[in-house]
Length: 273
Image 1 (cartoon, rainbow, N blue to C red):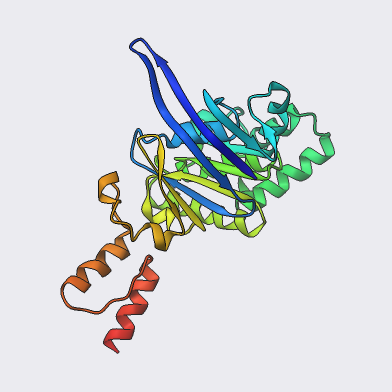
Image 2 (image 1 turned 90 degrees about the vertical axis):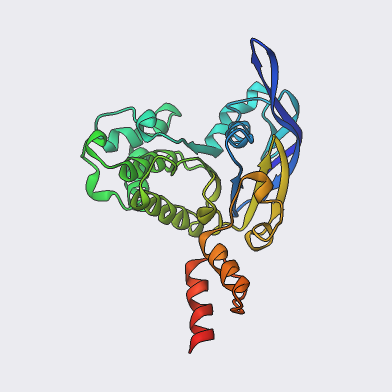
């Protein structure tokens, strides 16, 4: 679906060029949930912007469904297929009524009126916000606003949606709402790329890519990545359940490798029954 070939990006500053990404070569499969982890400054958000051509690589190539992002003639098709939900939901709101906000994208790519109405209804249902169709976004909670932002991207019918730190400004309830939406999207066959620093969110992914200083440091299934001894070097901690299990093992309790709270409860039940 997406292929980076030695891709890099440098920002120009008064002091010269600063490398945000260097020689990144990865392939992201269609229909998968991919999480990208890394501390601040690791290059996560720069990578996200390369994936839908908001930024163009200063070295290497980025191919989206075989289309080179560096070719200006491909940009419209790429951005139709790769939607992005940003960190601050307020920065993504363009209308004072929810249904108008969701219709904005399809209107701008020339979708017919009847089809726009169908897409708005479908997108609202997908994020469980149907009852808010005629509401004002500015009266909503952060999690609700972010769900409306997701609906606006869904109405474009993209093949993949990138969530760029989209839960970082939300409270636990709002984060839970967005993660529930992500699971629904994956169940509907939409590919999801989640840029995050939250290990608990990344646990749900099919694949985890960890960036450090602009390069790929770890890449694999969550259970494999979160066992790596490199995590402390990258200022990343294992998910809470994995950390608790590790502490229990150090205290002599033979708890198996777990990633989620549910798995931890299951292990403790097995040992204590």
